[in-house]
Image 1 (cartoon, each protein chain N blue to C red):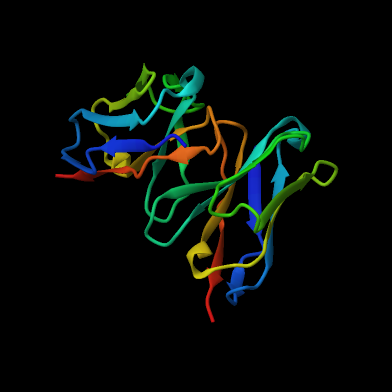
Image 2: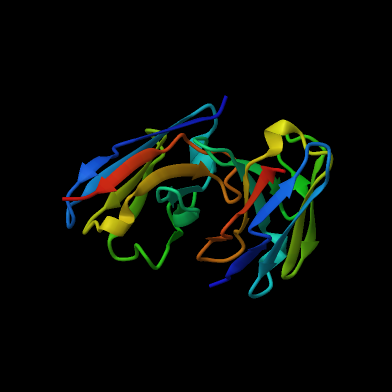
Length: 115
Length: 108
């Protein structure tokens, strides 16, 4: 069974940093590209970042470019999102999602940016 | 950036009726890399359709997707009580990947 479990969310002050993790199991993690998607409270879905299976291709949404860094460790079956210079508008549930067509999603982790 | 527009914003229907949801792209979606997701309150989004018309694993055949280029449609035949939810389209053929704003299907 495919499982994606996010962690690392919490309350952070504006300008602060946070690192999210996504632990994958039930499939060959190193064979799949991965994504981060976020959803602000009561709002729609916003794609954040993409990383290919080998980390050779990485994309970011303009809203996070230069502040967020996606990475992965295929030996640990883990995906990461390093978030720096956080703003109030980054407050959201952050989901990791598998593959180019987002076929499996984790349950999400809430990041709240507030003083 | 490809902007996706979904219509209508809200669709009020009764169980057993057919739902027709539209997704229009501001430019052609590469290789029909268009997906549809269902999200119920408090739940994670679920992939319904990928490649514009292919049903994801375990999705009932009352869900169907069609379209190409800039115009895409999700059809739900014979709405079941569990189908009342928000539906998002998304293109993954180019970066940035983009989602539509969603269509809420609620009970009339």
